[in-house]
Length: 518
Image (cartoon, rainbow, N blue to C red; front, side, top):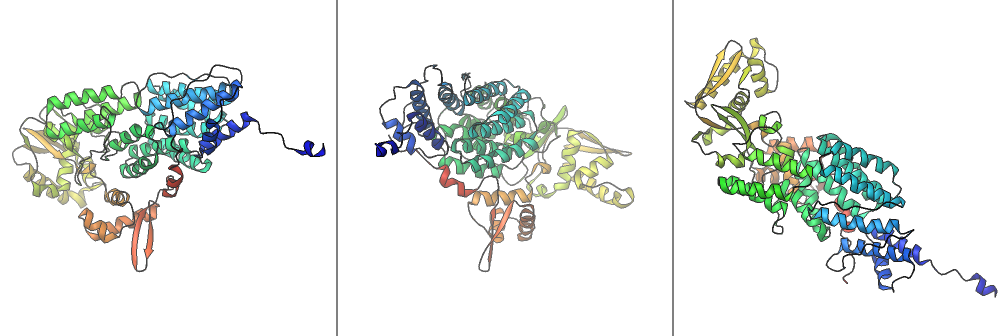
């Protein structure tokens, strides 16, 4: 009898299912698979948690596991029921299907998941500030680690949707670190994809590309449509299924480069329809199409010439090393377009000759004047040289600049100087490369490092970018000083690699966890 009294109590099946779900969140699916291999529990709450395990396995490997059934609304089953509902909603969102998917309240986790869905609906309607407040409140209230991290990632996404890129990037970095620290696999996919989006919005598409290409190597197939679209926006060359947003975006760029107006309009309409229903993506798509359409009204800061960064940091996949954009100046007015849209300008136009493309200062002056179209001398000088004009020191410099710029224009336009005011008078259509939109040397070097996938030396980078070695060396020094790159030494050889403290390659072995095939 003493021996029988000392025997441990059999494990509680409900607790075994809950523990299996917690391990699955960290990418260990063995217990979940073991529970699903057992006979279906009779207890309704345990059976509901079994369905929650099935939902986790389905999102991680949909080809090997069937879609889950939503458990009945039983007392005590609120959390696992909400887990299944949220998994179905996330799968639809990842496929860019933005119809409402309600999640029931009831338990602590169920309430957090329901708040996430409400926030996503608000975000989809364009109520980004309201959604941001909801995600922040949910993050503070949630007790489940995955709910905390997901709410933090969505708050970062909402910050980007409000236009606060600096806050969005800071929040995305924190969410990515939180997910990695807590070892939450699905949350890390979400936080990393939001981090990549924030990198692009901040003007660092090369860092976004690095994150996304590595995620695509390890993330489950339901994540592919979302990740490939973000990669396409950052300029990555991706192949995706027919009808996807990434394919629609590629068709818009291709039609613009071909100068096919009818194809462009059709592609733009198809692109808009594909992201309809989620305001951040719809607004982004409209801004991209406007930047490619020379006949569209100039409503964005980029098109008006206020911001040199392309809309939402989007990158043409065939973007070269020169100016990202051109100023299209007509007698009726001027606006900026992405260089890939130059072929859509149907009227005969003036463009600088190949040899004149080195006249960066003259082209900068022309771009600034075309968008103004009148500037005070002080404004024009600072736009070109980046420092204040002083008549005693810089008058001769200004006269030389005006002489070279007028010679560049020939008869296409003229620059009038009336006292302290410069005015550009356009006689015919001008297409002026805007050097202010060119990728800076530091970013080009960092992009080459990111795309290289490993350590590279300064000489290799200089040869690949076709720029002077000294330019690359100075850029690398600044990148190392700023913490964006680090030095690795192999004997006498000095090499450089990208440093990103918020997304590190060692995490990839864990991110690649998969359930076993069925």
